[in-house]
Image 1 (cartoon, rainbow, N blue to C red):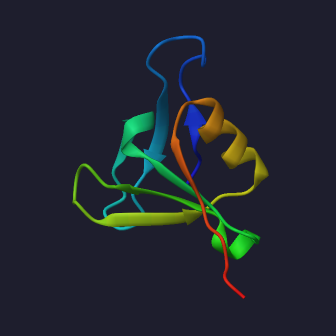
Image 2 (tube, helix red, strand yellow):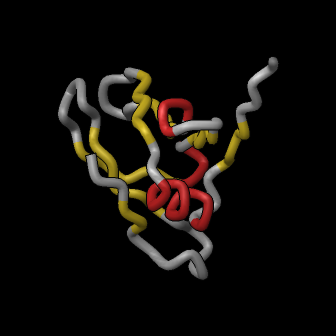
Length: 84
């Protein structure tokens, strides 16, 4: 799935183009419909959303570029901390 902002961050409403891996629907999501979790490694850094077509929860890995796009677009971010 390719995640791309459809509008400039200076515009009030940023939309992201997304697709569901389960039902294969393609749609646009607002920043409020996405969640970003940043962990200590690539395995624990991901974004998630609920597919508006089928209702399934979708979780995808988020590399550096995706993290930049999502944080720049106003997506709520959760920083995961590990306990030792």
